[in-house]
Length: 158
Image 1: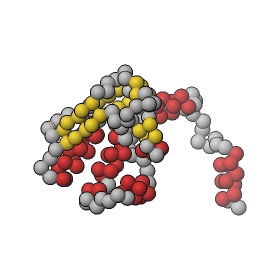
Image 2 (image 1 turned 30 degrees about the vertical axis):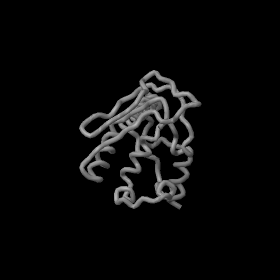
Image 3 (image 1 turned 120 degrees about the vertical axis):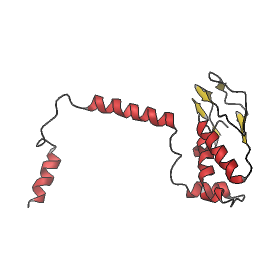
Image 4 (image 1 turned 60 degrees about the vertical axis):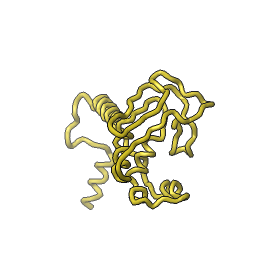
């Protein structure tokens, strides 16, 4: 779905700029979207249906998790990271599901999903570029510093 789970599942219209589809044994993806397609505001949010098969619940969950880790959609926000979080949730893995599961899941999770590999690589690159741009051309001596630091050192020796 093109929706934002961290924003009450609001729609996420926009241009799909990149798309990587999961494949493999026991994985089926039914989809009609493609890179360059614009998800309109007035749309059916179902962009694709991902299904997996396994001989048991644990295998099926692991297979779905692997498929979701391979699934990458850029340009819009999707619920793929949300589903990855659910699949790794201890309560879900144990099969303790009920009608209030999603509300309880939101209440107990403390951080958004970890970034996917592409986002992480871009973040590292941006940080490196920013760091290089901010680094002074000539390093100041070790004794140089802010007046705050000097005052703090003075206070230590009183």
